[in-house]
Image 1 (cartoon, rainbow, N blue to C red):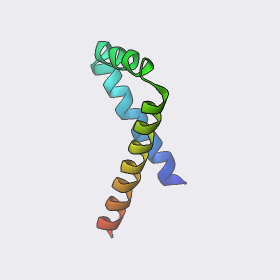
Image 2: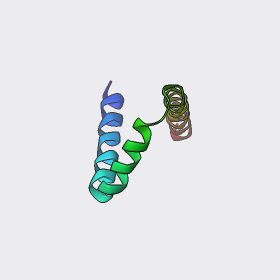
Image 3: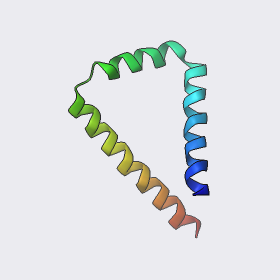
Image 4: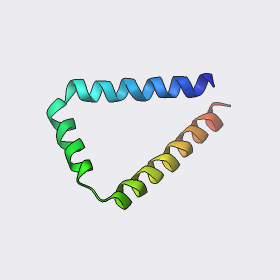
Length: 64
């Protein structure tokens, strides 16, 4: 559970840095995303989740 909270905190920190550094670019990205078809967004979400789980698995495996 501690790792999940740490991962969520890290994701929020990275997202916050992006919004603070590139507000206009992030606004444009969000507008583009809102115009994307639902199926495309779902596919991107599943792909991101699979890649994220793979990265976490690899990091834990290499750290042992």
